[in-house]
Image (cartoon, rainbow, N blue to C red; front, top):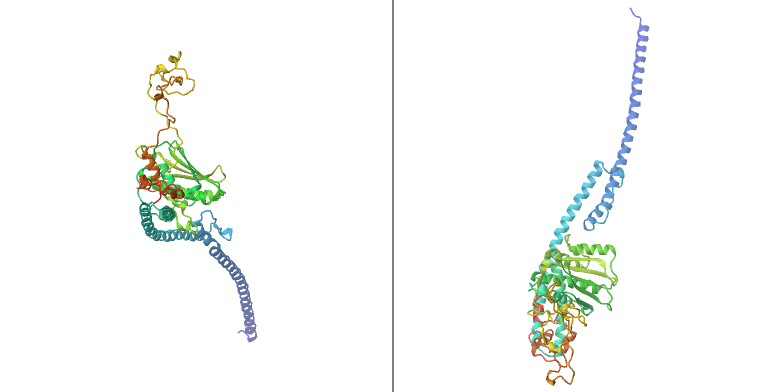
Amino acid sequence: MIELPDLVAGGLAAGTLSALALGGGLLRLRRQQTRQRAEISALRTQLDGSLRAFTAEVEHLAARRVPAAAQRVAHPHLAVPGPLQPLTVGTPLGIALEHVLLALQSEVASQRTRVDAAAQAGMRGATREIQAALYRLQDALRRLQQRYDDPELAQTLFQLDHENEQSLRRAQVAAVVCGAWVGLAREESHLVDAVTGGQARLAGYQRVKVHNHLESGTALVSHAVEPVAIIVAELLDNALRHSAPDTDVVVSLEHVHHGVCVTVDDAGLGMTRDERDRAQRLVAGDAPILLTDLGDPPRMGLAAIGRLTRQFDLGVDVSSASPYGGVRAVLRVDSHLLSRLDPADRPPAPSAPRTTRKSVPAAPAPTHAYGTEDAVPDAPGHHTPADGNEDRDGDGDGLPQRRRRRTRPAPAAALPEASAPPASSRPARRPEEAAAALGALQSGTAAARSGAAAAPAAGAPAAAHDTDHTHDEGGAAR
């Protein structure tokens, strides 16, 4: 039988062991809890840091990257800033943010195009009404010009007609930029008439000097007349606006291998490289044209050129400098847009500059008046005559050739009075030519108009008040 003290001692020993075990367990739990608290604190600190970094990244996205991405839609040369933390690149967060920017740019471009299309539609409707009113005013002015012969009134009507032409040009350019058709259809016309017609639509047309080096009769097919006139008018307008008022703008019309080139040289300040590149992009017509890209107020001249070059297969280059320090603009008209008119049947407008090309005259028929010519012993050898002038019937392949021989004048006493040469060999001016010259001042009544009534027309635009023949062929703007 176990005694009571032994039982107490055993219980105390067991309690002590249990307490020690419980204390050890509590100590382990406390250490584990401390470790967990440290881990939780570290995780919380890391989470707070990640949250601050993500917040900063989102704020950077909203404040810097999103506006830059939206601006890049309209200005592709702008750069979009990268993530705030370089380590974000390539991570799921960085990829997600890039997707946000791409989706934003796509939506901005879509909405921008839709809004611009609506604006262009509204402007097309407005310019259509304006053009119709200006056409009616133009017809009224032409009827008044034909009805009245008062010099002062004629001068006033010419000035009003020229102002109306300028307003009509601006409305027409705005309509073209917004996708409308160029306007009235034209008949085949001399190319020089289309150039002078574009010149007549401008203020300061007197500063434009046109040098025509084309073959006589070089013309445009009907659907290219008005586009060429519009393009020339806009190129000349730019040249006149950006050059000093005391300088000239030189226009040259030249044949090239694939057609004809109209070169416009001004003596302005020129353009910077960025301006030249932007102008070239506009006139090339490769990219879609939006009104919001044209500035405030919109500068529509180059944009209209770009529309027309794309629609009518023309070519315009403004990337070169002119010999006078300004800008050289070249309009190229390919051969498939060229035609030919017989100058005898349909001559150019009387105010158009005549071509500088010299046509080779046909060889005159031989008179065989051998009695009045020197007997040249070596004539069968076809030596060059003393004056150097010659008319060849052969082409240099051994066929006989005829050459002019100098005629020795007979003594003055031996010449009969009736056979004396006339005082002037220049033929008299034909009545048709005189009527055409007067017709440049006022159509329909030119042949009957006196010289006194023609004086007011001297201050009127050279091509804007040409004959109805010129206007019908696209020589003047409508």
